[in-house]
Image 1 (cartoon, rainbow, N blue to C red):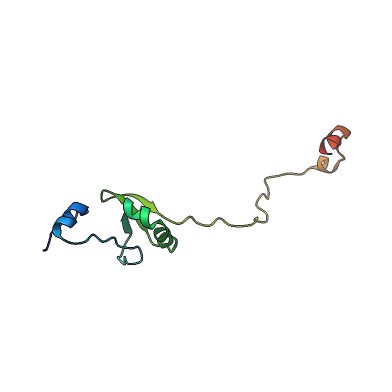
Image 2: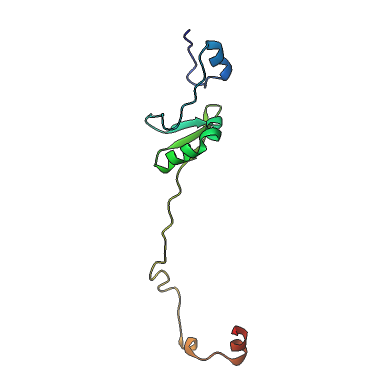
Length: 111
């Protein structure tokens, strides 16, 4: 039995069962389409780890609600590690008072 579906709407479980075909959920690894991969919320709940891995590989992943895209998953860019030499150059000044001995009351506060 062949069923034509409206391409603007996702098929419902009832329409698939009425057509006599078993519902299938594509896995993120099986989808090879140009452009973003789109998953409904139920698929995301069941396959979150694989979808995150797909996004971390640089692929665009979109989550849809009722067939309408609502969220895009993208990897977080890594922060630069370590300190950058000279990052505060010109922003801080040290005058001669820096090298003078501290008053006794301040020295006691540091002990």
